[in-house]
Image 1 (cartoon, rainbow, N blue to C red):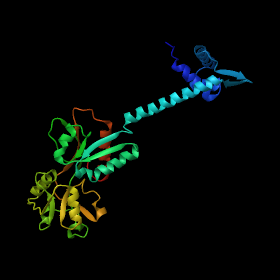
Image 2 (image 1 turned 90 degrees about the vertical axis):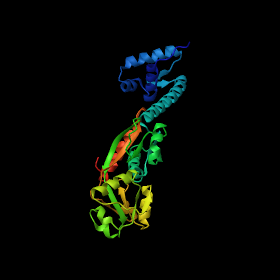
Image 3 (image 1 turned 30 degrees about the vertical axis):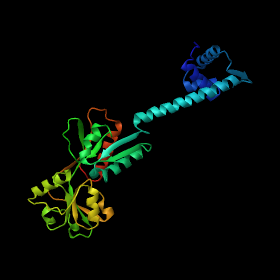
Image 4 (image 1 turned 180 degrees about the vertical axis):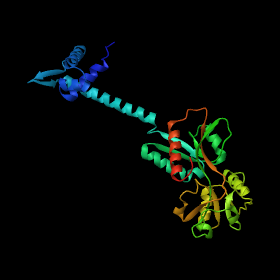
Length: 302
């Protein structure tokens, strides 16, 4: 079998070719010039060819050296690209990060978090799935995505969870509504209003019901919806008003609506959930951090 060349020999040869002199190559590699010269001579002996000649005091590479250097440079270029690819995979760049979100978190908070990550990792590719609460368990257990952001709690032992942020309920209405001037609204002030809201068994419905119970009021829903986007669209059409979590009500002023805190509100918590029996990708932690930063910037409690 042909003898393999030592990596050090290739490194020294490449340095001499790149710098054009033994002294400059020695400085670059932080070795003595005699040691470097000996390495070159041994390399020449092993390949059976002269690599450098002294002409008028200058070190001149032979034709063989020029051809060898072209191959060495090509291989080193491939190795550099391999190193970059390994770092990109380890850091999550160039990879596709697939995750899910329920509408309440996905409407405003997730886009803000993705924007933060893209500013740090512009090459990251995202695949975001919009999920109903009933689909979260299968989504995680069957490995369709790495994690889910939601306001729904879980008691499934196979799913792990951590808190993203804490918010409260807000009443959302058109900007010209008589209650739009209030700094805080009590449930009793919504008597007689057309309430666009959620069923009592939904995550939104449960916290709204509890808030009304604390206030000694009974909720009367006139238009039932399942997703926050539809509730906001109906408010924009001036059908009535709605009560949403703080994460969904962010920046509704952009669409001509206002959001006002609901008095005695139950706390609404946003969660990050993932499959507990699988390794958690670094991208999940990065998304969690970005969601927390975005929530804090919007006035939510972390």
